[in-house]
Structure formats: structure tokens, C-alpha cells
Image (tube, rainbow, N blue to C red):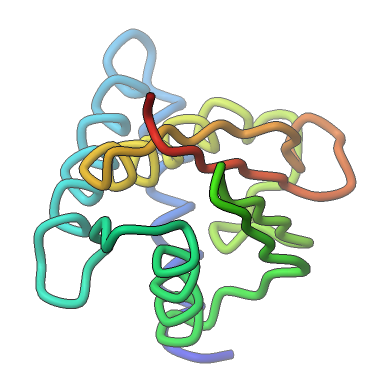
Length: 140
């Protein structure tokens, strides 16, 4: 297993631990994820709006190649992007991972917000769905 995949699994374990702390854990995990999303939207090579969903898709493909995230499908049209993941890079797959999953996804929501997009999670592995399906749309 690559160091990058191990890093994501470690990060997932940290989100799980935070979310188990009553009252303050999940908000703390969301703050951390949002800070990582802010960084991802502002560092060189990070996600930026470059004028089209096709360009955003290309950026996503580059990020996935760099990080080793496996995806089943990555489709786009000018309205949005649909991403299907057969497994979670953070290792979330059980119902008790649902809060950590949602908190971790604040990183992506924040990062795409800086691109002028909204991200919605249509299906999730921790909720018993067979895949995670994420839709990214340009804000109106």
C-alpha cells in the first residue's frame, strides 16, 4: 500500500476518533476538514475554477493520480461532474462511520465552494450504498 493511501486511512482514523468525542468531536473534525479544503483550494496545483467542467474534471483526474484515489467513473457535462467511488479513501464503510464520513467530506465541500461549485453526496458506503456517488455542480 502506498504512503498516500496510508495517509488517507490515518486521516480517516483521526476523523473517527474525533467524531466519537461527545458534543465537540464532530464540530472539531469539520473544522479540520474545512481547513484542509481551504488549503486545497488555495495552494499551487489545488482545485481552481478554470472556466469549464471539462477543465475541472481534468484537475480532479490529476489529483486522483497524485493521491492514488481509485474511482469507478468520472463523467461530466457543462452542468456538472459525477464521480463514483467503489471504496472510500478514508476507509469509511460501516454505519458507525457515517458522522466521520460527513465531516471528512466538508474538505471537498469547502474546496469546491472556492471553485464556485456545490458538492452533494448522493450515495455513501457507510449508509449501506454499494458505492459513493458525488455530484459537483456550478453554482447558479
